[in-house]
Amino acid sequence: MQDHQYYLECTKHKTRQDLLLLVESCGLCRVAVSEICGSILSSMAQTSSVRVLDSFHVSPPPGSVPTTSVPLSSFDLLWFPLRHVERLFFYKFPHPTSHFIETTLPLLKQSLSLTLQRFYPYSANIMCPQPPGKPYIRYIDGHDFIDFAVAESAADFDHVVADYPRDVKLLHPCVPRLRSAHVNEDGVRVLPVIAFQVTVFPNTGICIGSTYCHAIGDGQSFMQLMRSWTSVYRSVGDLSCLDENSRPLFNRDVMKGPGGDMESDLYNIYRQWLSSCGENSTSTQDLAADKVRATFVLSRAGAERLKHLVTAADDKHQCHISTFVVTCALMWVCLIKSKEIVTNNSSHDDKDKFYHFIFSFDCRNLLGFSIPTTYFGNCIIPGCISIKKSEAIGENGIIFVAKALGQRIKAMGSDWTDNGAKSFEEMTKGQFIGVAGSPKLRVYDTDFGWGRACKVELTHIDYDGATSMTEGRDGQGGIEAALALNNHQMDEFVTIFEQSLKLLSV
View 1 (cartoon, one colour):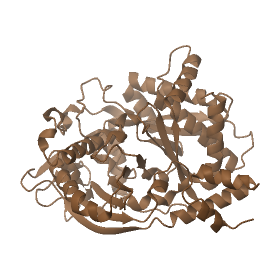
View 2 (view 1 turned 90 degrees about the vertical axis):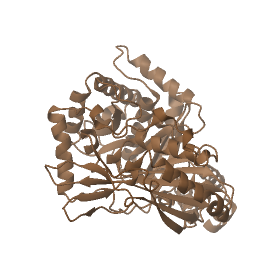
View 3 (view 1 turned 180 degrees about the vertical axis):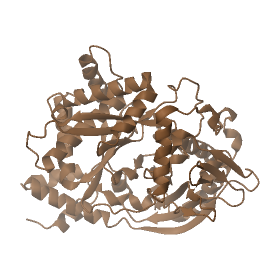
View 4 (view 1 turned 135 degrees about the vertical axis):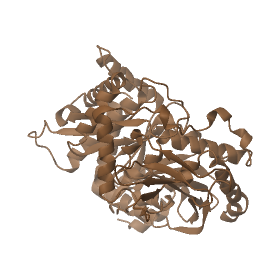
């Protein structure tokens, strides 16, 4: 048998599927195929070194925003303990690094600075006083800023943005580091909000990476910033390109608290987090050496087929059926089945054990009062479902899970406070498989003038086993889901995913 180096040399521009076909054509067994592909992909990942070229502080223009404080709402409190959100936008950029530094970087910094006049909370800090004090956003003119780094990568851009499984660590050098929290002289914990890093892949691509604290706002709020920044960049710094009616609304008075036990639970979450020294995603965690990351695409036609199957099974019309719902069901069932295989769990004794799933529920239109689309902050709460193993891996597991998820979403829509409280209660039961992101965010529409993003990734899911979800990058109504698993489970997941689509005629 020829050695791994031969395969590496002759396949360095191939996809994982090409690699599989090549080695299988040599008559190798599945284990050998997996080992060789792992060796190839590992070797390719070794070229992913990133060199930081420069770093800057970016803030609103001096005097453009007065020193200001903004309270957080009770809906923001839930998100303090969560890992910071890490989102990467990749673009084709066929220019050398020198071209980027000379012609692109100055306008990127200037346009971000101008955009922060409207979105100054991102250049502020979150102040966390000890109870009974409540957290708030504070911006000090001439003092606060965003960290903005510029780096260069030697990695193969096409490999980095591929869908096939590749080393999970490949993307993380593009993720900016957010400054650590500190405690000031008054005993108030001070949290930086966001950091950016632009990574250039010479002559091939560019990545705009962001890391931000979820307590500042949800995905809708972050995408308000990104859409405005891209508009100002494309207009070469002309702020008249921004619609006056699209100004972010920071007034928390429009967000009436949930009241009762749920509001008390939210403040308890904040107090408990603060009492544990405010530990969250600012702490680093090693990624497993054998972990790989992949993206799975469900076409619009496939999603419609799945929705039709669930609708046919929902004779009492109790479910909210959407592309998001059926995609979550498909991914979750494939995850359960792949986990059961890799753990060699063939016993039927635990058929009644539960798997727990958590998702974010947008309650903007369900609070009983009007929330402007420009509201800046968190307007999402967690929803949870629990499914028995036997139900998930059964013949109609995907349809069963989709119905359960659709029923929970519909129930939360009719009484979100009651069902939100139930979700908090269920969150104490054990470990969850979660989903991050949403196709509603339209992340692929983010265009600085280099064209639509060619890939958008959420890398914080690599640590906790969650799935991320975005709209399809082709704009044809499909959906993308990404996740990180160890090599063995990923191989099983890919097989089960493809088999499921065939069995469902998707």
